[in-house]
Image (cartoon, rainbow, N blue to C red):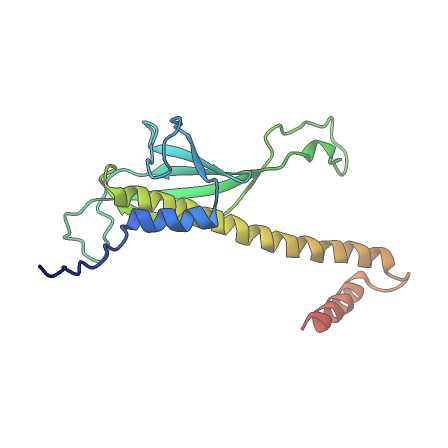
Length: 194
């Protein structure tokens, strides 16, 4: 009897998403609602349709909308979808050490100082038991974390530019216009980096 050549099954959208997440964000886990030992593929929502994920110090808050006719290309479509929104935050632990500038009656501390990053949006199937729903939620979490990485890289560059300007101001010779001095220094920096 000849052997049948059965083509390999292609991975599902959820399997593809999990494979990408495991390499890009190792250790990503769902923290709310929590379920001990649950796999990442088992996406759970609170009754308010929210979830929280954690990875490497980042928290990603997810909210899922109501079922809606989101297909704007085909207004007659009876298919329902859900909007998924995710945004990452990063706790900034040492804000207590920062002194204020100028007069205040008294300083107050922010015990949960967070950096917020741009939100990521996607559309998922309406059925929360469909593996494509979990894939869409996890994909949106990954996108929010990618936005956090991009924003962090941008913030590093911006912080370096700001530090340059503070240093340049301290080096400015007396009698030289601050605007002209900064304009000349920026031109020198830009010429050196191009």
